[in-house]
Image (cartoon, rainbow, N blue to C red):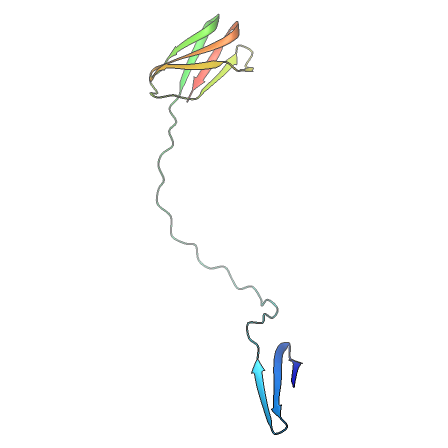
Length: 118
C-alpha cells in the first residue's frame, strides 16, 4: 500500500510494508518560494582593451556632373561606397573596383555630388 502525504509544503511518500513497519521516503528537489534578494556584489575587473576601430575614409567631390565617377583612394582593398548628390540625397550606382586604389561608380544620369569610401 502506498500513499502521498503533504507535510509543510514537502511531498512525502509513505510506503507501508506491513502493519508493524513503515518506511518514509522524502522526495527532494522541490522548490519553495523565492527568498529576499540580497545586496549587489562588487563590480568585476575591467576587461582587456579591444582593437581600435578603423576610422579611415576617403571623401570624393564630383564637381562636374558625370555618369561615371572614377575615384582614386589610398584605403586599399574594396571599400564601401556611399554616394549623395548635391542636394544630399542618397544615390545608388554600379560600383566597379578597378584596383586596390581605384573605384568607378556608374549612374544612369549625370549629376554632381560626393562619394564617401570607408
